[in-house]
Length: 335
Image (cartoon, rainbow, N blue to C red; front, side, top):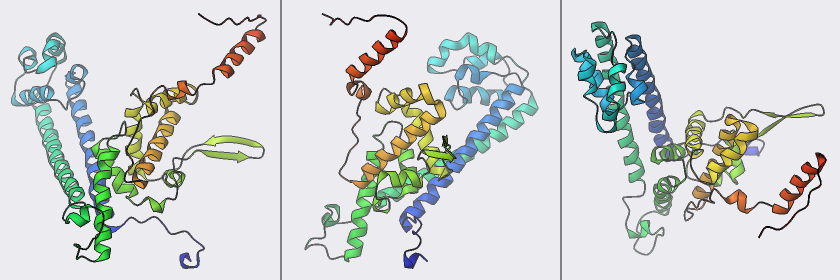
């Protein structure tokens, strides 16, 4: 039916992007699995009344790891364990002593050893996948002569035209990861996932709204008779929406345009809708950077909305509200 123009073809990225997607998705799954094992380890420690995570903030630190290893080895003295703290953790010695005072016994030690070994195994697999992903991205732009890297097949280029085009597009992909890394909230790992999920050819999505709609981040309106209400966004690509949600949460805490956008929306729509709005803005930025290989990210600034403020309209609104309270307002220009 697609050949007759009755149905739009599905988005299928090229083979090299599908290979990259397989590695990034497995890395995401293993990272989530490792997080679950950290949670199980924390629950095990709390079962023995060890509250080291309440002081260290996370078990995934060098100080906390040394203390857990000492507990497994048989050390039970909280003062000796607290002395294993490093760096700024040493200033929390008194709190650590109290947090390490518990009933950790041999069966806790055996279970903790199994959990740590599993965490280390997953960490090794994740590092191996990350190295493979970086190699795939590095191999895309490399391996060509000057004509390839210049983006043109000149007289000195004796390769096939299709191979030249493939290498030119690959050169764009390699630089795209670094350009996406400049967006607030998006790091190198997140940029790799985004490239693997949406591809590098934005001609598949004529506009940024097409990409946002495909990712199911567009606002929805539910209509029942004459009543309209806002609906939830669709499911979409779980890996893409997951990484965009994490990036939006990070960007919301920054003093940037995206951070200010979150703070403006969260006041009237709540945290979840504000994060979805920021994730949508991130995807729009991604589309523009991938659609134009020469484009670079430029932050509009946290004062973007303030500079666009219509002061006259705001003054009229305040005056109208004061007059509604029965007051007479006289405006005088400040010195």
